[in-house]
Image (cartoon, rainbow over all chains, first blue to last red; front, top):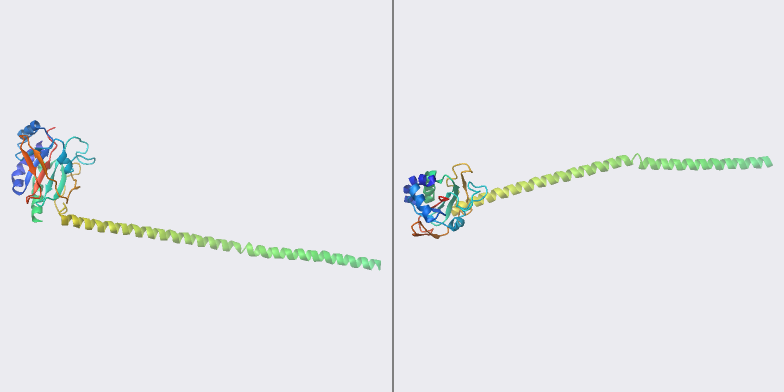
Length: 112
Length: 152
């Protein structure tokens, strides 16, 4: 949860360059709690059956940081460029600390 | 007369015996020559053959080693070329090549990369308030999807 709190410090800047969404499999009640605790201001979308996580291949796999977990999506991020192409697909349990990295990725994608 | 005749027979007998001995000696000589040809000369011939076989075996082994090395080098070269081409293609297609990579150890962060370079699928999900969000990639603005494990 603290990763979303960390990410919140960068979402305003990231939001200037990209649309940003958080996706998890929480219930609406859990999601409300999560937003209250972390203060995250971007849309938190509920992927109850993990369909989107599956589509983006973000379910845990052996050998990955959260590889032993089941029933949840991996922590991490996917960056899609303006043309709709997936450019980065990364598992990162400390994604909240990668605000600068995300901004650098977006800047480089924009520059082509 | 009788003694002379007898003596002559004895001599002939003796000559015959001598002749027999000579024949036997000749046979022995021939056998000796045969042995000499097949025995003492056969050994160097056999050793030479073995040397030739050993040399042939060494030559074939060296050929195999050279062939193996050549095939290995060829495979490595093909792999390097394929890697360069695929890397270039990933770059051309807009893959993650050239973008900042994972910035921590693999137990913390890893590139999944299985879908990099592919079109992002669109989807519709709702938030806790029941509001639907339709995410449609390729509308001229980058998208960051933060995957989170939830409150669990």
